[in-house]
Length: 190
Image (cartoon, rainbow, N blue to C red; front, top):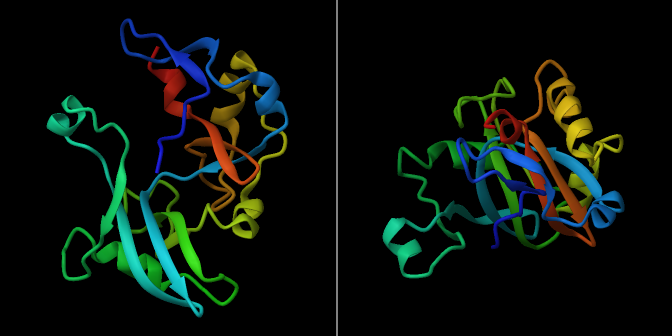
């Protein structure tokens, strides 16, 4: 699993907010699909015959691993008996797998007991963002890509999961792969 690039360069002076300099080519962004970025915990589900057979969570490299050149995150098995993972399993139990094909699906667990519940959900849930039919339900076709327009547009956007709450940010997809992201807080750092 590779981290998704932020579409703009960071101003490495001060608080490291984004600056008006693209990392992802604007012409590529203009032809990509913009979707909501959900604030939660990254997980991966293995599905067989519409049944969850494995649940993993993202593991980021620690400082020592980064120093030795390990920069990309990976997945490790979640443990249902662990107090830190029980809400991930609760999220998975609320996911209807009827239309989900066999495979490994990257997703975001969010809701009542996860990451402070910014979307104010009554229960825990999983957004299968790697499952294209599910992803297409959370597109934002009017999302701009220009720096100033995006900076003004993002704070006004409501979530596709809860129209009473704002969005965390956007992820752009091309050919089924994420090509770039931006978070509302990326602008507020500078």
